[in-house]
Length: 269
Image (cartoon, rainbow, N blue to C red; front, side):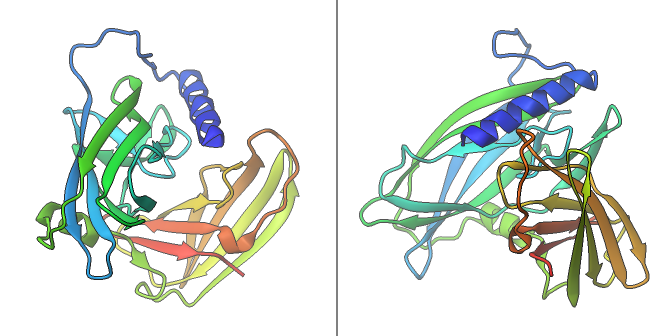
């Protein structure tokens, strides 16, 4: 979590350098840009629970995906105040690409329903979230939010959560990804990563997001192009503290984003 907070601070510094105004918590503003609640959801047949974090954004505001891009603020979640919770897994819906001041960010506007799969540890479950997120319009505002809910012993499906689950990216198998090849080479301050992804084109202009799967590593905005049946993505990976590092290729994660589709690809050869 400390690494994520340092990353958020680094992003705020980058936003200031790009000329994007950033408000601190002590700055007055006319209205709250975001409100949050937990949708309590339903109990799954295997005993896990499906709930959701529901963020409503004021008109013109946006918030960020798990990998927010160079102009985004990474979300940080703390579930440690929950009761009888062994694990919380966020199931992110397909995000959108935004560009501001020449930089790319990845996220959502209007609202975000983020499904949460909760593995209990026995007994009634109380889910409590303390989170730090970024919201941006003409200005960027770091927000600290606190929400809690007692999860019901009910099998009644929440249609809003079900709709968000249906917006998840396709898996590599569903998108007919046949191969992912990676090569690395040294470059100033880090390494250059080139990924060749054999897959059919998806609708619209294709962009990629690269996640190293190692929280201390930072990936720059990739350059993406298509050569026939192969999508080529090139990015630079850097250690957040400028240290040398070893790359675990099995932890690499590539998300291919189109106009209304996305594909989630894990690892590369």
